[in-house]
Length: 442
Image (cartoon, rainbow, N blue to C red):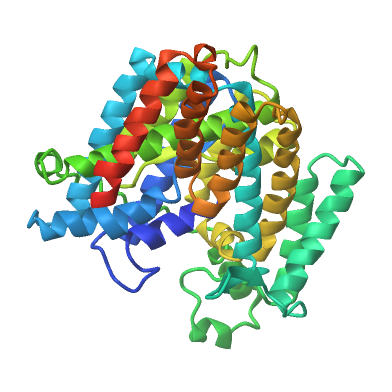
């Protein structure tokens, strides 16, 4: 999950796109680590599950490309402050829904086949992200995506080395196979100068006196350890007054939708893989669902976008994580990362190092397709829509919506309406209205 520490500020500050948003890079970095640590610790201590949380991918792009421009176009001054206010309000609503138990009701209303379809779909999504990030799968104007034929490129050599090494270790049941694989290719990437440590203060003058052992050690230390960035440029800078205006109201619903269904989808997928489900229900579901609500509210106050459960938690589960101790370690490492940003930057900014782990985790999660009731088309078709919808829409929330809208309709018109409670029908109606009258207009 370390990549989010650097991707998040690059997105929210606009540096990734060459269009500054006004948000400070360092402050967003600090807000990202602190909100991730807080939400993950709440999950670990209150729900006791090995599920880590951080600002979500997808929500951050919507924050920059939709929320900020809409606020700026409305003449609300600093658009990013209004956008933070919108995220804060959506988090508060999300928290209320969690306390009322509505999210738990939605969670329990999803059938076992749909739950396994979500887990398998997330597995495909994770693997697809890994293959894209490393450059093996590339964009194509004719077919959307295609295979990169340049197999001899250094990036792909690092990726395939990591993938095959991790797969062999996994097949031999070596504990920590994912970690050992990443560690090995990190060393290889450094030796080939494909991944470099470069800390603040590295200057030409320092290189001129590189013969001095003391200076060399100082430069190495500077390339590993750095002071945590200041949080003050974004802390409590949210604009709640304008966020609650009628013009921003649709955006609150969009963020709420993404947060609800991203969180439920990821929670189902990871918990299904870990074997936590009991009679199609998750023990302590309400406690588990409070953590991302708390994280989102705190994250907006600190200066970052929506915090949610991370699908990468499946990697920890795959390596044996079953309790809140896993989450506490992740939370501590997010805080520690504030002091070791150059190292995290090196690993997180070179996708061929982490991509093999994502592909291996995807392979582990896809096995849930065997638990789908393929003989019952009223179960298998909605499950398949989720399975294929998540990676193809590049969104857990949108893929989940495809299955949740189709499920009660197929049950109703196949004469099996009594198998479905009232909530799935209400969800299908709400989702349809959302896509027709809210999402389409933004």
